[in-house]
Structure formats: structure tokens, C-alpha cells
Length: 413
Ligand code: KG4
Ligand code: ZN
Image 1: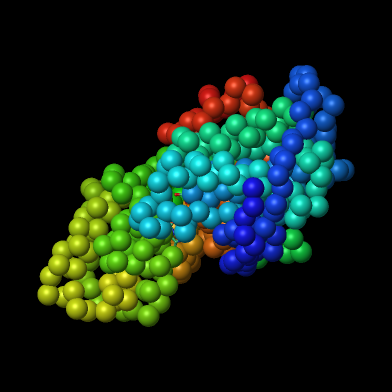
Image 2: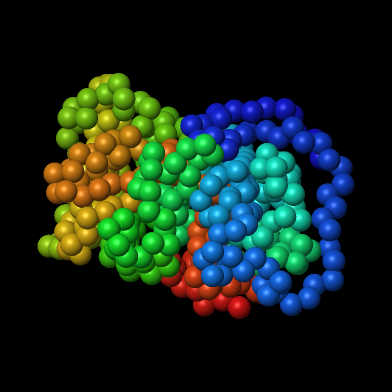
């Protein structure tokens, strides 16, 4: 299989690289498969179990839930050694959204190559991997199955433990990743996700997960403990960005395009509605906003600058997300808020949340933009900490397209 050479958008995170093409030519994809015995925990790094730290622990994270094929090697759950993200955006852009069947096929074509590239860049030999982490839901079933099947084969062949990771948990744990030669304190707080007490403990906290499929407000008392406080009643925030970008003729995916265009616009130029869903509700609704944009584009105002419309729409979404997130923080009396998911890359959301939270004495943290969108490093990070707190998956692991955060029944051994 040959893919043309090309390296694009290296991104701001050392170790992370977003690519549109792969330069690897390797006709035979021979994974070592030896006879499988019991899960090799006993003979394995005890340092991970007792929390001691004598040897580095390497997790391979695999992400194929939607239109990004990604693999990463992460040391001790936090340090990104490599993070290769193969984007399928070009493939789906002409359809205005992700076509599941096409996505599955492309994942199949590139996933092994992406993993090999991630291993190569990390300098970690396949035999030195300690844990295989893979997204098993939520997401598109075909794409999920590609990653899950390969992760199971790898775990079996290398005789390493397997851990199924919830994609949303991965997004949350992107906040705790650290870059090579840097510190996560650059974009988050220095506390480790395992800290659960003391003055530097990040828990409890509120996390807003805003992506193409979710707009969830989550209360976390400690890693792995999630309480859903609010969610969207119709479109997810990212979905609203994508649909409005399509209405405006901007292309796909809409979020980054609207974000860029909005930089030149006046966010006060186009009056757009905010949904009111009842006293104390932490839910969202974006369909009315989307319809308002449609009406605006049909009406006499359509001659106005698209940049103004983009800025006004973006502010309306950010405003709703920030208002409910901070209301959740007040309701629960927490002083820390995390952003996660693709929409967390949005510049207006980051700015608005940081400004308003500061007035309430709340600390805000979000990953760098490249780690907000789907990537393998976040899956490795979440997988490492799930494994460390005792979660396990068996080779029976299956894709669960509608997986709920905190539901471990289907991944448990
Ligand atoms: O988390 P993600 O990569 O995939 C899902 O899990 O869905 O999120 C993708 C979504 C898309 O809807 C995309 O338009 C949106 O995140 N997105 C953004 C930005 N970057 C990506 N939305 C607003 N502003 C951005 N800068
Ligand atoms: Zn995602």
C-alpha cells in the first residue's frame, strides 16, 4: 500500500502531528502473533499498580471513532511521545459531512500505517508497549470496529493488557497531557489526574464536553466518576457549527471555518436568539439558532458580511455554553472548569469562558487546539488512568456506538 508523501499542519504540540497523507510504503503488515496465555498483568510492571515509578510505562492509544485515524504513544499517561493524526477531512468534505462507510474503509487502509508511524516517532519498540488503549464508543460503528479489532489483535499478539476507552473520557483527559520538553502547566494545572485531595487537587470539577456529537456538562468528583448535569436537546454544538457553515456555503468541517471567518467580523452585528429552557436547566438547544441563521440568509439582511454573521453565530453558541457551564459550577460550588472536545478549540468560547469564570473566581483549563479534536494521545492518557484505577477490558471488547460516559459494563473483564 503506497500513500503519497505529505506532512501538513504540524500543530502547536510537539509530538503531535496532523497528516493528510502517509509516506510509508510497506507491503507486508506482519504483526507478531504468539500463543495467548492469561492477561500478563502479574508478570508486568508492578510500578503501575502500586503507584511507584521506577520504569516508564508506555501506552499505545488508538482512535478511529469518526473521521480521524490516530495512534499515539504516551509515557506514564501524560507525556506525549508521538501522536499521529491522519485526517480524512478531504475525503468527506465534498459530501458536507462524514460518510460512515467511506470512513470505515479509509480507517482500514491506514490504521496499521498510522500505528507504525506513531511507534517509529516515539522511539518505543512494539515489544516495549505496556498497554493497548482503544476507543470503543461512542461513535460510528464501522470506524469503531476497525480500531477495536486491531487493538484486540495487538493485545493478543503482544500479550499486553487491553483497555477500552470512552471517547468522551479521552477528550476530558486531553487536559492532562503534557508535551515533550514542556509541562501541562502551560495549558492546564500541574496536578495529576490521580491526585484526589490536597490543595493542588483538580477535583471536583465541571467539564464541558462540546464536540460534533455531544454538548455535555459533566460533574466529576474524581477520575472515572461522572455525573451528567446537562446536555443538548437537539443539535450538538459542533453539529450546529457544521450545519450553519453549510448554510453559509463555507464547507466542512464548519467549526474551524466559522472561527477563522469570525475573526474579521462584528459579533454584535446580527441579532440572534438564545434558547431559554426553563429555570435552572443546564440543557442546551441550538436548532432555533440554526433556523434563525437560515431565515437571516433568506431575508433582506443577507447582503451583510458573512464574517459578521459568523462572529454573531459563534458568540451566540459560546454565550450559551459558557452561561450553562458556569451555572453548573455555581450549583455545585466548584472552582475549576475544564473544556474538552473539538469545539473546545473555538477561540471565542475559550476567551469568553476564561473572562467570565475569572469574575467568579473559577479556574479554566483547556487543551491546545490540536488536542481538542480527535487524537490517539487522549485515548492513551484516559486508558492509562482507567487501567491504573483497576479497570480492565477483555478480548471480548466490542464497539458500542451509543456508549454513555461512566458506563463500564461493556468494557469490563
Ligand atoms: O471532538 P471532535 O474532533 O469529534 C467528535 O468527537 O465529534 O469534534 C469535531 C467537531 C466538529 O463539529 C467541528 O466543526 C468542531 O468540532 N470544531 C470546532 C472548532 N474546531 C473543531 N467548532 C468550533 N470552533 C472550532 N475552532
Ligand atoms: Zn471527539
